[in-house]
Length: 407
Image 1: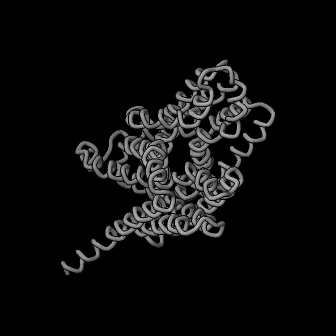
Image 2: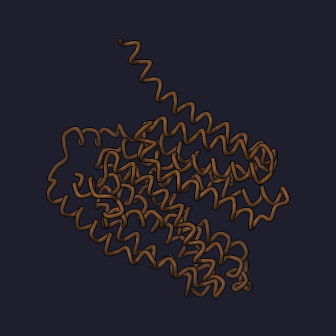
């Protein structure tokens, strides 16, 4: 799919297509976190149902399971049928399934709607990432990726804060927030029209593109990027999934402390992500990876030192800053690997990896925390991220050494 010139020179904030895609990216954080403030009251309202405590907690993670199962197939569908139709279908399903919790009669029905919401997220995220690859290139693409991570981080404050206000009136009202993406439909319809016009104008791909797509030479690198993404997200998710227990164990008010810690993490990550274009343009993708992994390793190292507010806040800031560089780097690398006709498939692999990392993080790391404690777990995370930084530096330095040997 050829790149549209109007998306190469216009500032992102003046490009309605870019704004639509940025807002669509925020649905990822809306899907899981928005109903969190309403969970205690929602459990109380269904107290007569068996397993109400378990079902209400599962409402948060249920969409992630659907994403893991559906995203690879959504990627194939994006390549086969086009990104625009998939994006529109995903956003509409997101609004319908997400808001259904405001009126469904019981927890089992709400849980079923949450699984449908996960399918919508899988459709939306894979099509959105592929469209970014189609519509943007070079420095514009890196700028978009940085702004995308920032938009996701900052929108989390809005969604959770707004949900908290609504939950004070009724635990059902926060589900209505999921209907907001319907306002994006006109912008996304424009993307669909542009995609159809390009499809009619472009009658065939180049021979190199066809050969690369058919040879599947992109598949192994894409899977490698997916595995690295999964491990990184798994370690990063120590913060949202385990920070409340870490603070409670060390005598802090876990509710207030978690809000402060995660607030620092997301704000720092969002601010650094805005600078991603400048950093990646100056350093290149391998060095940006190395810097991001190093910052994350330093953050977990700080958390392992002592459970006092200076180290907690420093650790959260460093982890957030590092992830603000690493996450857009994964998406950039995935789009560089993928031939244009396979961007949907590669987007599906990376989307699956991100959500799988979230799902397995507590399953893999909780036993280590229970057996060895938080400091050892943080050191293990820091060590693993440090090794990733060294691997990224090796990928940067090895070509230079090979060039010196041949000269």
